[in-house]
View 1 (cartoon, one colour):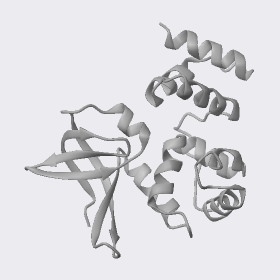
View 2: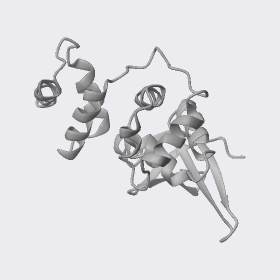
View 3: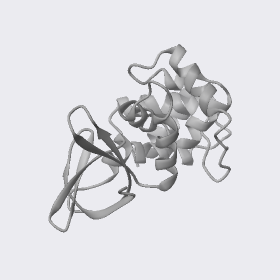
Length: 190
C-alpha cells in the first residue's frame, strides 16, 4: 500500500496533479481545494490511497494534504454507491468540520450540491456516517449562512484558501448572510 508520497509537483490538472519522485511521475487525484493551494515546482507530501480498477487493470491514487482528510475519504468511499470520485467532490465542497456539522445536524442541503447526489443518497451518507464522526473542537465551524457565503465567493472566482481566511476574519456579531458576504468581500479586496 502506498500511504504517502513526497516529491515535486510537475503538473496540475483540473482533477489531479503529477508528483515526481525520483524520476517517476505519480498522478494523484485530489480535491479542488488542494489543487488551488499548490503551485507547479513546489515540494509536497501527500497522504494517498490507491484504488485498483480490475476492469482495465489500472491503479488510481487519491491524495490529501492531511491524514484527517484521508480518513474522511476512506469513510465516504466505503458507503454503498459512493465511489472515490464522489468522495473527492464531497471533500472539495466544504471543510471537514462543515461536513461533520452537516452530518450531525442531518442537513442534506450541503451534500446535494454535489453532482449525482440527491436527497435520498445524502440521507444515506448522513445515516452511515453520523455515528462514526466526532466533532473536532479545534476546527473552525462555519454555520449554514457561511456555506452560502463560501458558495457565492467561489462563483466570484476566489480560491477556497482566500475564502476561508476571509470568513474567519468576519466578526461573529454579524449574523445576516448578506452582511457577512459584504464584509468578506471587503476583507478580500484589501
